[in-house]
Amino acid sequence: MSDMTNRTRFSLTGTNRFRWKGKRCWAAGGVGHFALQLAKWRGAHVIAVASGKNEALLRDLGADKFIDYTRQAPEDVVREVDLVVDGVGGPKSGRFLRTLKRGGTLFPIFSLGFEGADEARERGVTVSTTQVRSSGTQLEEIAPLLSDGTIKVVIDGTYLLEQASDAHARAEQGHIQGKIVLTVR
Ligand SMILES: NC(=O)c1ccc[n+]([C@@H]2O[C@H](COP(=O)([O-])OP(=O)(O)OC[C@H]3O[C@@H](n4cnc5c(N)ncnc54)[C@H](OP(=O)(O)O)[C@@H]3O)[C@@H](O)[C@H]2O)c1
Image: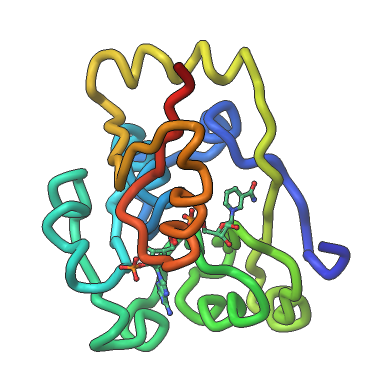
């Protein structure tokens, strides 16, 4: 994380400081399906990126446009966006820098190994990240959105606590649709 050009908090509270309305951004995945819905809630135009099997789901959650990354590289076909939430992240996250406007923000969810600090500086793009942590204040803020259906939780599968190893095995396969739930009796 030391090579990040800038670090700011990105969270439900943090979204209050980002002027979403009319902004163009993109997101997909277990984390991304929440980012997509939060961005739509705030009035952004959202481009979702995932494999084709997720298109119907992501459009149903509000995506304005969908790109199947197995058919075309999103970084080759999108330009002038305000925010990229990269649900893959890692060393290759810098490929999205050229899709952003000057003044835009790249948010790799997994930021370790990021290699684009110099290019980000040249392009005038902020690179931000954070690590998830439990916050009662934020949960209080988000609870009404979950209760009234503004934000939906997509569940890939539900496992009993004693089946936790099966849940891990499913997670290791990757390409989960939404989240995995462990039930404690
Ligand atoms: N910073 C934090 O606090 C925090 C918190 C939670 C998770 N994470 C990290 O964030 C990452 C994402 O977690 P997640 O639970 O959202 O994972 P996930 O459910 O596997 O989501 C990854 C998404 O990326 C898509 N994808 C896969 N390969 C791609 C490619 N080459 N180009 C574009 N999109 C691609 C997948 O689409 P398909 O499924 O259709 O292939 C899926 O929608 C993980 O590395 C995780 O460790 C960080």
